[in-house]
Image (tube, rainbow, N blue to C red; front, side, top):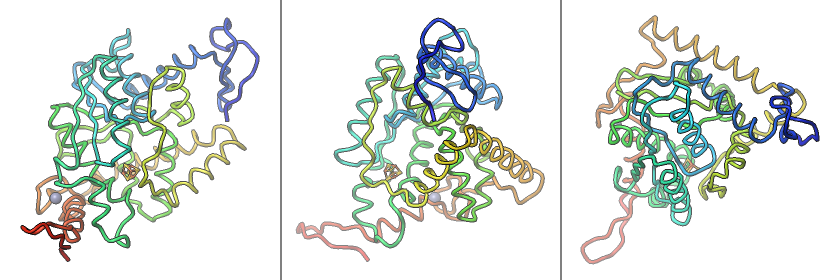
Length: 335
Ligand code: SF4
Ligand code: ZN
């Protein structure tokens, strides 16, 4: 997609270009690339009214390139002349409990927070749900769910809990343009039309006090990675050992091929997806069958799309298969 050309930066005209945005034709030096990326995020924040002056903003930080770049960009917007994100930043990290993997990411998150002087709140699956992801996946029956579909449900709840603990007004997550269009395609391919309404870059649930926003919605994944690299952000590049992408990696490859042949295709798909999502979401607000309506979970009282929330359903599956020690130290499996 991008390529290195020996021409002057089309923005400052002084330094040699470092990266070419094929979809726009700009060839940019490293500094102008960084600046225009931050400007793009600022425009997205304004366009969708994502953040308001004086708010306490929780940034979901996993320790990967996307979330640490988002934290750095919001920190820059917060401290700079722009007003889009003037408020207080708090990094929210979820420790899923994956031995040999998550510790390094949390260290990177901590280091960047220290460098930027940002408060860092960490919550863990063990503390919130009573088991680590390692234990949950060890216990569950392989046939029931993929690791990511189970983990994703716990992770969303964990971020909500961290947001409440940190008393933030809004949570910013680092979903980039590629994540967005892949998820849109995945929902279409799964026939999950209702979920399309939840893909708004800025969402609000009447049953939960914290808004959710995605300030990197208009930034290509490749450009987030390049921003992290140029900004010398230390991040974890190893993938989670449980990552199970299945169809998503095929969708990613397909979209990357399309983009290579037709630069800007992902941008077009993003615009179409946002339009569909917005229309569905508005349709929901006008009648009782709101695609965004949640109800309190019949068991835990937290917002849920159905009678019993995903976390309560998953927790039950995990505990059904949990191995427990009896008073003599023998292992039993509850079935
Ligand atoms: Fe959880 Fe999947 Fe992410 Fe691993 S890759 S932390 S299993 S959602
Ligand atoms: Zn529940």
